[in-house]
Image (cartoon, rainbow, N blue to C red; front, side, top):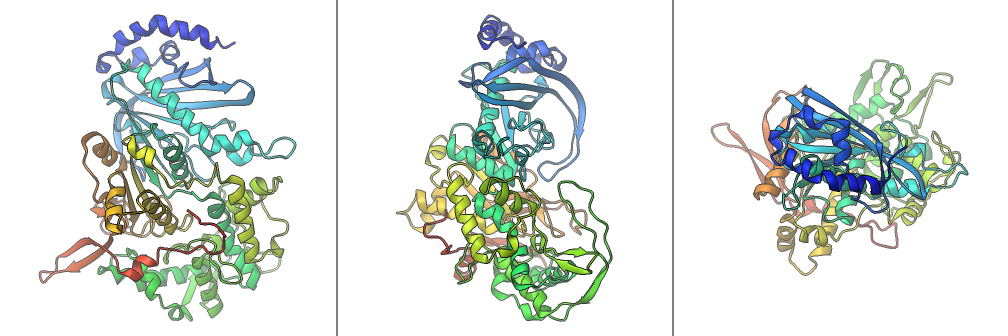
Length: 595
């Protein structure tokens, strides 16, 4: 049976001096001496949050020595890292949930007075331990949470409906913002206690995540302005109702028009777009760096008649991304194929042409429009993407249907608009995550690095542009564009990642911002403002693998030029008015403004 928080508060008071003495110089304690169950129990943040009761007996602690962290999209490879692997659970009396939090704490000799929170992806609030090395590598404790959803492999969709079929407010609010906040407050205090930091000693606090984790990051910056000194936010799945339901757009237009392009035909179009638009930035290098110029100049008719050929593929065995087997495909791209490709990238609109959401940039994939082959009939049909189905059926309609939408073939583009509006109304305060006034975070000294792959086929890059521009106009409405941009950039920088997909490099030679945390650390701790964002070519197919590049801060765009000595250089320049406006939308399908 867990001991009461009162008892442990007394124990902590009695041992506080001993803990402080043993770790007053963090480098003086060995990992083995502090990475024990008893010591972690003494270090627990018992009274950090009112209404949270930590189960002291749930603590696990084990030391890990000389670990190697394989390179990821968000940190390079690190060797020889040692840390204390800690978990414990807590509850909220009166609410039926048990939350498990997971922290890695660096060896005392490696600790640099830093803490890092991480987030999840899709319908998961956690990326398990895949993001925790990004903290340890830079001398930070790092944490994640299961949100109380039943484990670190659980999805919020597993538990979002109560037993009686109604929506669980407890789960929705925990997923929306509460569990990340609690994990952060607990993790910061655990770190202070574990390393014996005095109240007057600075603990720098950071956040880093992408996709759903990016939305979670904004949920914290917007609501809890003092939680983080710096937040690194990638491709946030914000504007939740719009974002999740727009995944149904590709299937909807295929069904509505009765046109089902073969996936191989769409891939041929995507490759042809790359060839057509690659040189528009002044450099032919295997990626689209100026998707705005591509949008303005794209010649769709040029794709009609292209030959395509693809071998048969086996069905995917990944339970989180099931993909049916496909037969061999060959033929020529038709006008109907091009029509669906164009409509897919154009994004949701109503039957009257009113815009529901932003476009995908030219060069992205067509995963939401990939058709499924029916072996029995020999025909192709639409594929409903799980993210959109589960939001429509579980969150909005509150019915336990997770693989289809029973009345989907009765939908029109206007139905999708209506569903988005309903989801927006229902979850505006918890999941939309678009509050544009960041004054409290700015005034607390917080910094944001926000990045988004320009060729993201899951979360349209223009969705991030829209939020940045909403913040700029909301916070500095009386300043000129240049002055308001400078004011925002004092604490918030946004970068489009040339040629990148969703939270990762996509096209060959894409420079990806793999070292965002050390960039943020320099900004927060040393005042080094990231005018451009450091990036590295990490694609295995790259001809320039390992090369360094610098990403332009919005709204500046990359332009390449070659001098008489055949030396190519890159500059960041303001785009033309037409190129800038290609990122800006009037979402006139709704009667109120969409931040």
